Length: 253
Image (cartoon, rainbow, N blue to C red; front, side):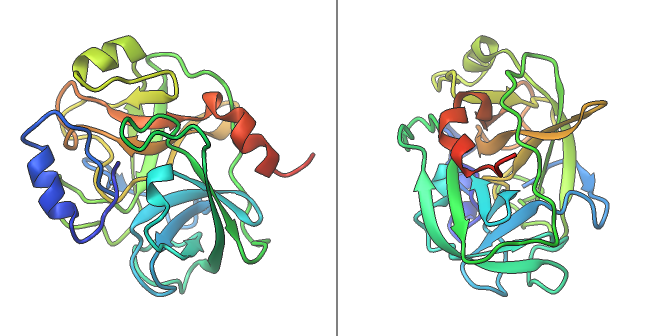
């Protein structure tokens, strides 16, 4: 996973030397600062209401955040939705997490089905949820990832929201590139250009497609081998295979 805790620096240094999946909480490497006030559905998961974000997430309903399963169980009891900044909540909407629900088939060893739902203590009505898409994303599709993760493997987190565009991979080719780790059907690989990737602290954050059909969420940041390593894509939880789990939490239309 790509989770930015205090131990992330140590873990990232070790993981950079072997072929094990990076199970730290992840950040954007090689991207640019996102425009202030856009993509406000992004959420930062925090241990305290005014602390720094350790994982990312996306508002998918007024009181529901979609994140990575590996971001649960770490006492990240607060979220701030709509903030541009890593710390605090002055420009966002804070809420408390009252329930964490991991995908029932989540495998914490392989990161299969690495998606989870966070239920909030309030409805957030001033920020529109992102549209969730269960489309199957093929190879060579341009996608976007955003977060406050580290700007290099084991480095410091970004103080502002960053973004980078990455192209999707074929799962079989991604499995070869990331061997012996398997990119299974519940995963979506993207990236692999040296210098552009998600990294520690971006975990759980959104992978989106943005084209003439609009912006839509298709994945969540999950795991990788190091950060921004040439020909080694980052891996995301694929939402198309988690529809039965996610659909009940979406707004009824």
